[in-house]
Image (tube, rainbow over all chains, first blue to last red; front, top):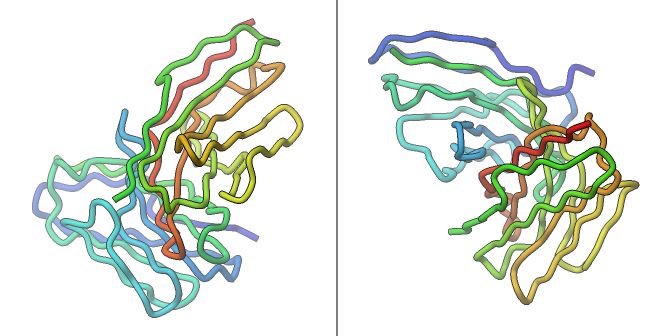
Length: 112
Length: 112
């Protein structure tokens, strides 16, 4: 089992460009999440999907959109990147709510 | 929404000593409290979790205590080893939404 995978590992964007971060899990988990991690601020929830077909906002959703493509895949889109979105992005999944979350390896995004 | 505060931000202990990290939460409805360990450049990984119907949980050298009245929970690591050096995050989750709110992290350094 690969667990939770994310692509790409690194990305540099210019202000105003768009991109999609991909996440997939092979553990048949129902719930998936997107976090951003900034120095000194811990992990902050951007969006989550409690189950296939549902998505909901987290703590910092502005500037992002998500798609739960199927049970395995959950993508995060930046429509018009801004320097404030420079961060490390982690995808995670859990079997059900309030259970252990398994994290992907992260995507380091720099917006110039 | 939920607010989780974590202290201290950095902690240095000698090998073999104990380490204690404390967190407080604001929402009395929170019922799930996991602790994650993140080594440098790696993804966060769950090390222990506790639910609101339990006051204490132990797993070898690691223990977590929960005081619902005071709304705080703590991580205790005994007989620390160099491989315990990492950043530790506490988190709290409310009800069925499973929206984890993380603390800002504690960088633990175990010196020889």
